[in-house]
Amino acid sequence: QKEVEQDPGPLSVPEGAIVSLNCTYSNSAFQYFMWYRQYSRKGPELLMYTYSSGNKEDGRFTAQVDKSSKYISLFIRDSQPSDSATYLCAMQSAGSYQLTFGKGTKLSVIP
Amino acid sequence: DGGITQSPKYLFRKEGQNVTLSCEQNLNHDAMYWYRQDPGQGLRLIYYSQIVNDFQKGDIAEGYSVSREKKESFPLTVTSAQKNPTAFYLCASSTRGELPYFGPGTRLTVL
Image (cartoon, rainbow over all chains, first blue to last red; front, side, top):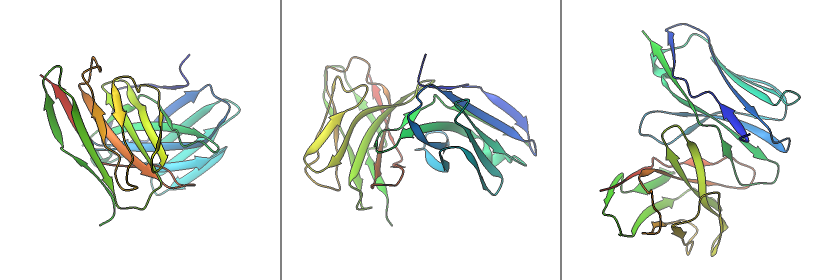
């Protein structure tokens, strides 16, 4: 079993839809949970991060972490064509410099 | 402007040649990283360095070498021992307690 599992998609939704992106993980030591957005042929940019369990909201984006289920989610409300990108989940143990990434989900928002 | 620069953006290599990818940061970050990204594979850690003159192997270090002679610079050499070097290479940096910030990437193609 891989440490981090993420459905690669592709996922195609109409503009204005609510998007749900998910990752599962197996390592109980992970404490920090991140979502990166990567546009084609560009470096990833940090979108959201959460420490331990709970929710975090930033504008149209909401990140959720359920440590008991080892499951994290990113919700995008009122999706826009500019949200079309690959979304990577990443996780980190406390005190570690290393990130463990999911494979990324490619999202297309159709006007 | 503060940030990470990677050069070149595109690089072509003949089989059997060593090539060096440049990564420079002016963020005064202590830690620097090299990741490799293949289609459908997510990001995999090659090497990382927490301080000058020190570095550690990541998950896929075979066929790669690095140096960290200056805080601002962390060049990656892809040697002829790397059997499948065609990929997108991403450099990142971070400081203690903060998450990595990624550069724009170098796309390496073996001819």
